[in-house]
Image (cartoon, rainbow, N blue to C red; front, side):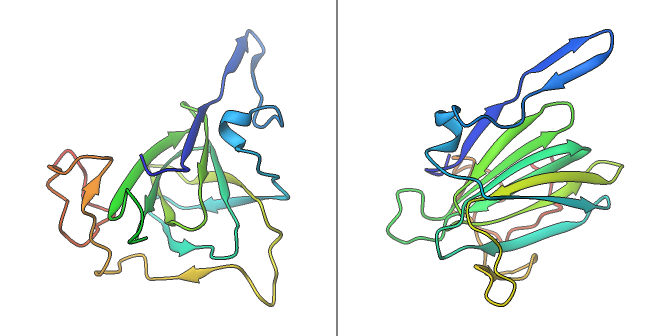
Length: 172
């Protein structure tokens, strides 16, 4: 796993009425790493939609939760001085497997709505969005120059060494 990515399982408290889940607590130091989340956003995406690639160069980190549907989050490390240079990590989260996922903003990242229904993603950020000067660098979702050297730490994955394809299942 690329350094700085954190995944926290969110516990469901289920009873005959339904369930209750804590989405965020300031005492979750393992997941928050001292970050201060200053803004929460809601994103709605139709099945198959890809919202990628972007990164933040001025210190913003992102926190993702999928509350309806399922998504595949991907993060790519292109920092040549990093121990995980060329690593691409895939993280699947859904309404069934509630998780809080921290992605360091310096990494290229994005997500794909997977499954058969639209998704709702809550995401928190550590810097307020500046409308006239957003902390965002973008590249196309299908950028052919994004070529992982390993995927989820696996050098033998058949997708390694090829342009990243969001639609190529690891199980093909």
